[in-house]
Image (cartoon, rainbow, N blue to C red):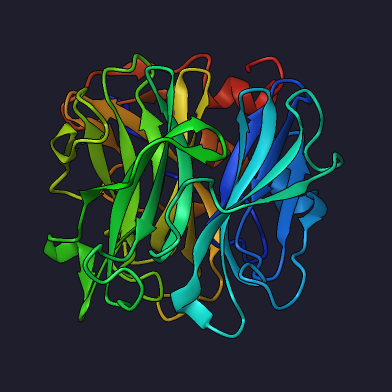
Length: 358
């Protein structure tokens, strides 16, 4: 009986922390962005494997000096929403450092144009979103046609001075750049696997849904990104009002952590997810060595399958391969508690006929 293929493929040969990948049906191109520090950079490729050897690199935004958004640009995300491209990113003021990190938005060209070549404008913070709270890692999700903004922030009772705790918050949007509600806390690091030393961290929220939408939720990163114990966990949306904390159910077992083989890559975190035909892949960063800290965080790709309990990525990070045939492997997968499923229109066909599959 064939088993889940947990092979891990490196998508980039250089550091690309906090990778976010999206695909445009209009341009038939993939786009990758990541934390570059002093700029927002987009890479373009006509297939995911081409990000490794043949990325087409573009800097779409470099902030002016000495502003509230000039330093430490973190975790940009490229979203196509309501007919236009947007980038959401965190940044801080050079004179005030990390405690001044807030979320900002860039508005780009229309959705049918290439975001690497179109013009971009600085919108500023999300309109109507309070600026008293430290905030990073913002993402936009859509539930029943309504847009929501989810981010990692310091607790409400210490919104601008805490560097030990990060919680997850959600607010409703009236459009891609305007808040329509106050933020609500939906997750806090109260499990041992979400903590490292004195730090309790929930960050990097990302939308994930099963192919049939029977499971919808958020995957977030936890523990310390500077350690090899970084990992990702799930927060399931139970179907109620997303602005109610009881509409979200935390998993008691991480979705992905270090693999049992002890060979790395290490510290899987800050991932994004793509539906590819019948398959789903998680694209996360992980380091080459267990003591790399914030160094050598490269984008890696690994399958996600769904069981009756929700998403599953095996027992952790799989064995790293540079072989496309090893990654494609056998397209019959079995997850714990799940049934064999042939992904005949998934990874294999996708990698061979990338533009015909989407």
